[in-house]
Length: 77
Image (tube, rainbow, N blue to C red; front, side):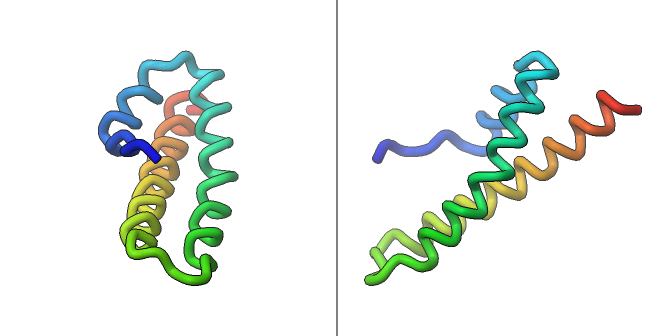
């Protein structure tokens, strides 16, 4: 697997999208990231990189939640 993009780069990509595409992308991220976290946490046997992967996925989920909140404030105020 290739190295994932940083949260700051992810944030800038999302912010550069039109509003409808932002909504679609963030809804998808909020839907799939918890599944990825559970899948990685439930992996048997644990891989040496599992802890790092879970930490990254949790930080990406936190970033997506913050972006979702910003999107709601900006577009529904």
